[in-house]
Length: 166
Image 1 (cartoon, rainbow, N blue to C red):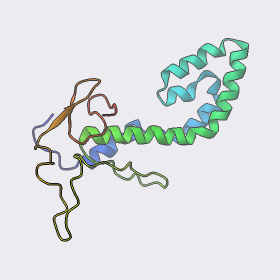
Image 2 (image 1 turned 45 degrees about the horizontal axis):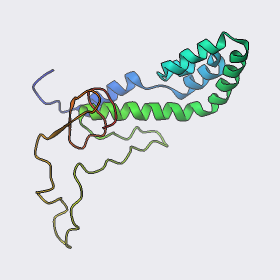
Image 3 (image 1 turned 45 degrees about the vertical axis):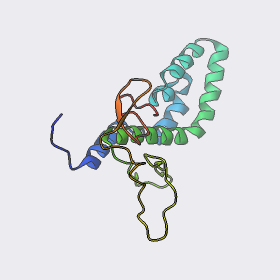
């Protein structure tokens, strides 16, 4: 990695996001036509459920169950794909240290980011709109991820190392 700061982190975000995003129509079609085998679960990287679908397909009762379940899941796939895409966007944005940009399609709203430190007492009218200096974190402060021990910037919601919630 270069030692120079990258001025265009949003371009990097969109490039990485396009590489990992999933399409809603593809998810619905996989659930409808190959759902018995769990293809829609593998599409959303739910490998455990995909393997369970394959194992259940071997039995006659399991095949009927997976067929019915995958037909019902066709109606829920658009929401699940949007949730998957939002999670991927948040993880990529956290790894780049930027807020999640608006994606440009209706229905998507970035999760509100909490302040990186607790809010202080209310400021008097006309006073500065910043937290008191005693409440602000020191420059370069980091917190460790409980899963992978990766050092993350204070205020990050997702780990830049493993993508888990902080």
